[in-house]
Image (tube, rainbow over all chains, first blue to last red):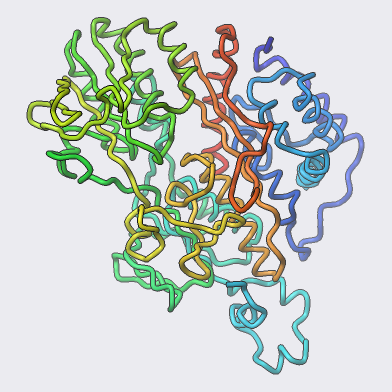
Length: 113
Length: 430
C-alpha cells in the first residue's frame, strides 16, 4: 500500500538537519573542473523527476541534502521492494550497487555546494 | 570523429604547433574552453536541456540556442488542455532563465541549413553561426501526404494537435462546439511516433470531458497498429471509468485509415470497405525527423536520424549530435523525458571530449505518465544502457504500473504526474 505522497516529506527537515550536523567539506575551488564523471551522469538523470540539482519545485520528493549512505539505502530498499513505491522500484532495479554509490556521492557532493 | 588534440588547440584559439610541441599548454588553459562554440538547434526538451546543462557544467563554453518561438508549449500536458482542466499558460515555457541565469545565447530564428563541412549553421534571418560541436534537436515533422485526400492545409480543419500550440487550442474548441451525442474520431499513427501513449491519454481525457458535458458522445480510435503502449492498463481503466464510451479499432479490423474526405469528415479504410463519419476528427499523421535534419543529410531513408548508440553522435556527419524525437535511440521511446535525458548524455559527452576524456557509459531514463482522469494515472518507466550495440532497457528493471491495484495507487501516480511536469520543465527551462 502506498501512503499519501506527502507523508514521508515530514522526514526531510530532520534528515537535512542531520546532514548539516555531519559537517561538510568545502566546495571545490572555483578553478577546479566541474564533475562530469559517470556518477554525475547517473545522478543528473534523476533530476528530470526530482528537480534540477535534486531540488523539487512541485509534488515530487527532493533528493538534495541527503547523505550518500541514506540515498543508497533507500535506493536499495526500493530495489528489493522493502520500501513500497509507485515507480521508484522500477527505476532502482536498473542500477548496481556501484552505480548507486557513485550516483549518491555526486548528489551528496552538490548538496554541499 | 574523435576530437583530436590539434582540434582542441585550434578550438581554444591559442598557441600553434610550437606551443603544442613544447607541451607548454598549462592545465588551466586546457580547462579553459572559453573559445569552444556549441550551437544547439531547437529549444524543446532535448535542445533546451543540452544548452542549459552545458553552461551549468562548463560555464566557460559559448552556447547558442536557435529556436524560432519565444514561448514554447510542451506537447506533454497538452492533452490536459484538450481535456479541459488545464490552460495553455500551464504548458507554456520560455527562455529567459537559460539566457539570464545560465548565459545561453538564445537566438530567435529558424535554422535553414547545416553546412557540416564548414561547421556552420545558416539561419532564416541571414545570420551564419560557426560551431565546434552542433546539437540538432528538431523534434518531428509530419508526413502530410500519407493518406489520400488530406494535405498540410487540412490540419486547419482536421487538426493533429501533436505539436502543441494553436493546434491544441483548435482541437479543444472543436470539442467544445461538438453536440452531445456526437462522435470524436482519433486516428493514431503506426510506430515509431512521438509519445507512444499520447493518443490513448488523449482519448481518455476527451472521454473525461464528454462524461461531464456530453455524456451521450463517443470516442472512436482508429489505429494503424495492432497494439499500443500500456494497452492493458488503458483498456482496464477505460472500462472502469467510461464504460463503453471509448472504442478502439486495430489496423486489422478496419482501423488503418487510407483516405480522408475532409469536407464530409469521413474516413475510409480497407479500400473503402469501411467508412467512419465523425463530428470532430483528430488525425495524427505519421512522422519523421524535423525538416532541418532531412535537409542536412542527417536522416536515413525512413526519415529518422541514426546516431552512435553510445553518445548520440550522428553517424552521418562529424561533430554533430542528434537527440530527441528525431534520433533513432534504440529502445527509448520518443518522449520529452527521453529527450531530456539524452540532452544530459550529450552535454556530458561534449564537455568530456573538449577535455580530451573518453565518453562515460551511456545511462538514460524514461518515465511516461498518462492520465485517464485528472486523478487517475498510469506509468511506463525504464532505465537504459548501451547493451550489445544498441540502447536497451536494463533487463529486470522498468515496466508499467501494476494491473488491478486500488484507486489510491492511480491517484498517487496522478499526483506525481503533475509533480513530474513541474520538475522536468524546471530542469529544462527553469
